[in-house]
Amino acid sequence: MEPGAKSEAKQGEAGSGAVGGSGGSSSKVYHERQRLQFCLLHALNNLMQEKECFTRAELDRIAGNLVLSDPNKDQWTPLSFIFRPHHNVLTGNYDVNVLITALEARKKKVVWHDRRKGASSIDMDGEALVGLMINVPIRRFRGLWTGRHWVAIRSIDGVWFNLDSDLSEPKQFKDKENVIAFLDSSLSQGGELMVVLQDE
Image (cartoon, rainbow, N blue to C red):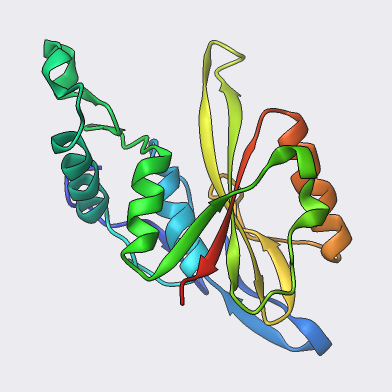
């Protein structure tokens, strides 16, 4: 994908579309699919349920500004042009600092969840809760490449969805207990969980 390219959106197209909401009604669930290592871009747009709420250009700008304030910026090597501290210039691969800064710009607060408390300690019905962001370890190419992947989880019209950009379409959870079990499983496998709240 070229610099400034837009996300691959899937709303009402193949791979997404109408899914069952509460009370038997159907609602449109916005879902972007994975491209290169832009999972944070897709996860943010899936979380916000809005096409191009965030763009690659904006996340690159945030990452660049974070570099300018990095006290270790003088320790760069020639490879730092591509493999920057907060993202990869060619493929994305943005870090948690970009996530937090991007969401704060939309008046959202990110709270790192203490894994020792388990997912059941999260107020899933809280009025301020926007959704959840999980950063999970992944293996690709038969284990030859390992990395991490951003996933958005949120409730839409009272129904919880896994909006993972690696999925061909959003996956509906049966109930909140099912969401909690999924989150606990992710945490037990090395995942990190961020709770996204509407800032006052």
